[in-house]
Length: 529
Length: 89
Figure 1: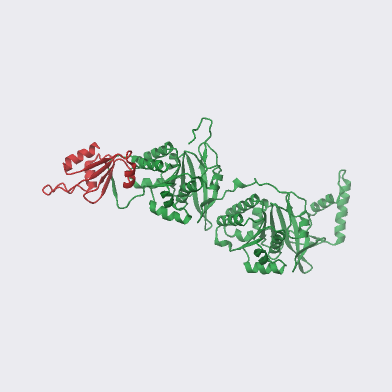
Figure 2: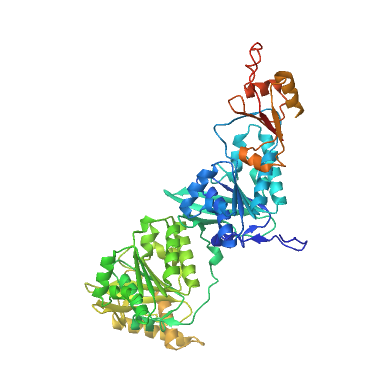
């Protein structure tokens, strides 16, 4: 243990739970007690065990688990499912249990005052035995229920917290609360026993459960504020999804990559940026999946690995469609440059999806990821959960310098924006709009690059066609206005000429008028609005 | 401790065996017996196994808790073998 000097700020113990350490800005304050409060089923015991498990596995720090609630045998059995073999660690002298769970066979009568000195002696003994650096106590509330004299329990818990500090361990104490938003803990004293307070929540929102963790206070040191969603996965335990922590730190790349379509590349000023996130928005049938297919094909052609996350169509459908556009997904998969993940979004929560996708990405190491479509995922969770998913996902792939292409479906056939876009458009670097354009009794397709961060791009709305070779971007829709608003109006060439000449006249009348075509077009656009 | 000795002397005369364990000296014993509170009085014999925690300031409650009360009026019978009782402190 390092001797703290007066100038030392509070040091932190990296828990080994990587995602948690991010929001805790390094870990739990070392040699202090931290209260972890939560309602029933919020994941307190899992966290408490994981705190020790990560210490043992990742950092070689032994731990002591003090249980007042479940028996040691129950905990050993329950934690097997997370891949934590507590019994093995006990045999290796890395873990010790202090089993203070109530034994229903033993009746205890209280006569007069007592203290919990025996318990403290046992904890001390266990800490000494395994040379523990970490102690988890689960849970304080259960101590209260074992004794009738609450005032003694209160006093003794303070003593135990004090005792833990003097043992030089970093301790995690759990406590129950009755409501997800209410008093910190049931007995109203738990939060004063510990130096730091964290809260786990398991809130029912729109018929779906949402788990969050919040660090309420860290005495004398900093942490991320607010609730962070987390999920509990079978082989990893509790995984926090840090949002603000990972945002806007990514590098920016100047490297351009092909969208898989030469004409679209040209419209984007030479292709997408390597670590950018592109949103392709359009009504059903406008060619979003085609854009995705070409994007993957473009990557595979230069030997980049591509990952397709498909939530709308089955594997067979996707492969058949791709063949129809001259792209052979099957061969790409055989060559190891493509992986296709097809599933209904409903099979997991958004938090689980994010982790699942992160794992696939970590394992497959793709250079390109396409997600078709975000709108399908949106229906799984709440608006907030969806936003967090998109933030988490985009920042994750940006960190890995992966190019991401998402699609979103607009609700109306003509024009309009999807709800999805409203939520996430600011998170994307580029937006490509695909729109139906009704012209003389015929549905045509239009494409425009709405936004291209860090690059000039073609502002025109161009017509494109789809055939068995894929997409062909053609000429701009010259004499049509109002495509984006969904009400295309045809303007005769004569009318258009008149508008232009008027603008020119106005422009030349002003002293510092610019006569370049750029300026003129700008004026024209403003005039239309 | 004084309370316990007094109770034993007054109520059980010589028919008891008392073992005192200091949990600070022998924490492993406390661990094995799953003891939390000090002092804890464990009555091992005669069955049933009983535990009383606290300073034992109320004699009647202690005897009731240990279920030794019933034995008292039956003076004529041979006294039950109470020992060994264990007290931890």
